[in-house]
Image 1 (tube, rainbow, N blue to C red):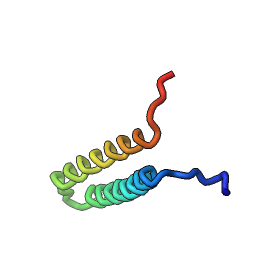
Image 2 (image 1 turned 90 degrees about the vertical axis):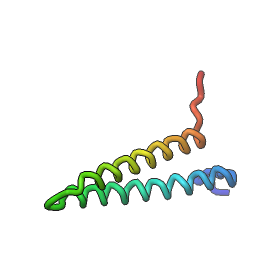
Image 3 (image 1 turned 30 degrees about the vertical axis):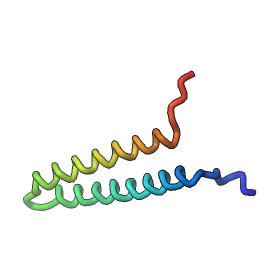
Length: 74
């Protein structure tokens, strides 16, 4: 048994996979926003939409991470 790799339940593994996918999408949105802001005439409406979507993804990541590691009130 490998002590370096934590064992996850099926549900936790699915949550970790979802977080990984959301982080990738979040990163892709950052790159898209950066590219749009570099344009000669930036599309402010599209940038605003992408930023809102990026924020929603970040909120979902935090929500899932809270499910994986709930706060312990001592």
